Length: 346
Image (tube, rainbow, N blue to C red):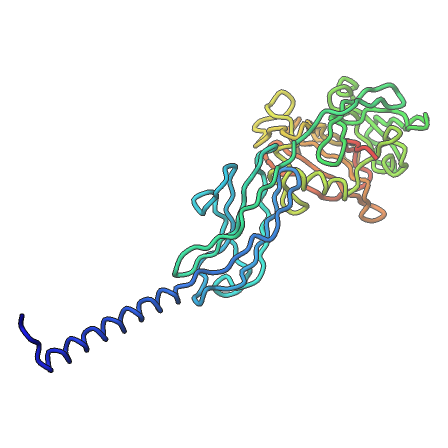
């Protein structure tokens, strides 16, 4: 066996030491490759609208390159399942909490959700949580007004709505509502009134009556136990269907009756998933004319419903659905206009 010289032993020891140093350095480097620390804080559901929140407590020692949520109807979700990338407005996504509202989910489904954060070392996930979306609507008990007209109803979230426009010619106390037909009388009227679209009673059963806001203001239009919706009532409905006061793309589509049996083409996006069955009852101008005679709207292209919320002494809010849009719009106009009325249960 060959003996090693002192120099050979020295070189061997030196090489072995270098190997140990390099090995320890690699191990130390691996330990420094940390992932972010992210938590899935909470989930909240309203109908088909899901609110998610998460907190980033550590970036793992390097900049965050992406952050958000992932969700699916199957468990063990990753960023391969419907990733939503969200920033809290800070540089590199920042630490702290972020909140995201996901709209238009499927009704009656269990969703699995978790937050994620990514740095240069990889992706970290928060705890996977689950939540169940609500049904869009449930049929409820029909209601009869003082005149004997029957209305079908549905429960949408926490509310119960009529699925038909009001058609009564009497207040709930039995007092007759003024019926105005001539354009000049309507134009000069500043009080309660009703009419049928185009002054044709054939429109009563399908589209209901058109009322001035002064008739709404009496508080006696709706059957006992019901009321004309306020802005707050409309907001609750929109949110449950996945919208809000500023953005109601999903809500509008779900409120309109689908197809062109009653609506003029194209009736964009209409699905009637809510069961609300919004119809184009049209309207009457405050100067007395109907839109079909003025050319401002094609027949059966719009439905407008009063809100019980007033803007000032001359205008009140209303909600409109149009054939050419999937949205629901909240706006305001003259109280002397003739609009449809849809009631909600007290």
